Length: 528
Image (cartoon, rainbow, N blue to C red; front, side, top):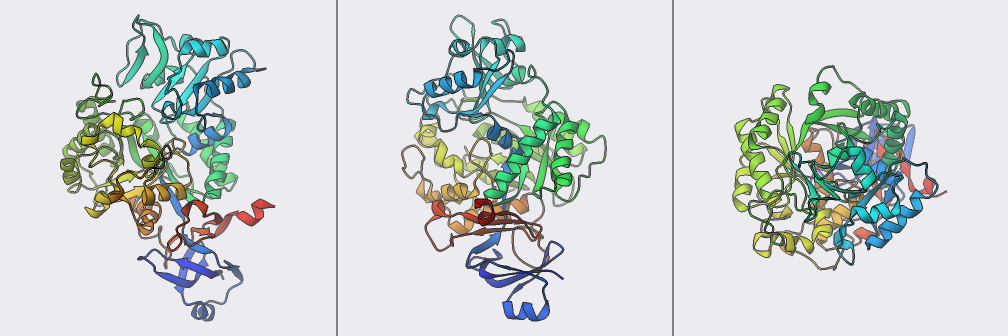
């Protein structure tokens, strides 16, 4: 016997505007979707869920996120909403009070583009806060940090320290480090931090999943396995939370190239809610710190065109490594030159198994010739629509007006037949999929509230597809996830408004989140 879902508007997403009256579920799978009276006659039910007029759609899945990183942001200092460097400094002073000397203080999410003075904080300002605690401030993009002198000492960074491959230690005119570290230079400080405990990882993961459920997410494609000192500890935390604590969430884990060899040394089976996917690697950095790799210099800094994380030879060697394990590749590519180098490597070493496809993550700065090349390859573009709202208008100053035509071009990509999936890149951007959908549909900046490149707006249906059918396709679940139909997983997001008919995305709230036919979040219950 199973469960009958009825009493609301149920969008199947099989095609636009397709709805059914009821859905019948057994053992976590949809058995029937259609006419309520017929389903009641065919399947006498022991359990019924009345939607009470709410809107049910296939469950949202975030195609690119850092699940543990999002949890860390929830338990650390959060600078995301701060609009001045003074606010950041004051929050650090308050945090440092009463802490045991030597305790690391880590904060997340500063963004000089939303500071009134556009200021990059200097390590000397952090030294004035504390010289006894190592301080580390992670930029919102996670491709740059600012640290104080104490943290630099622990990391062994001196004026004589050379830039590591794929990174930059920013120095003043006298050759002294300013505390600002870009991309791979961050690793010097990360490696100086004490290894986190399994208990800490479990806490971060628990808080993250609970917040995902609240936002209507039933799953996410996440990349966490190389950042916490021990692959086995990280996997143990996932096992504990999702299998022993019974936190149902469909976690698809990418395997960072730094741990790929260790990961492949043994069979990995962590139950039905944890699966493993492509090998993850970075081709470049981010636009905020001007480390995204461009084919010509930055408009607002002609002395650089970004950072290549790997040489061309090493990038191709890493793709070869993925192929040796019969793995797909998931490549971080923000700049057009990084995207071009990723295409070169994929063309040189295509997937080895039938129906495999690689993932190019972000795909923000493109050119027409790159779009044409991408159309000929087995790839999916993993896009983050929210970046439109948070990158404009300052990204125009970075890139230059003349180069913007094929950038953030979500509508063009889809119209050209490129497969796309939608994610947040949390904790870089808010994890709420409704905010991502809003950005894809409206393309409105959070800074000046102007609409940018309106010709690239998506319909609500197209945007929702990114977070449902697109995310399912990215990991080869297009035949059992992302729609409400017979044989598909009973994963649902229930909303209080019909987002396909009402222009009220920002006012829409999640009523219920359902994973494997289990209600993991209920607004009424959590409000009490």
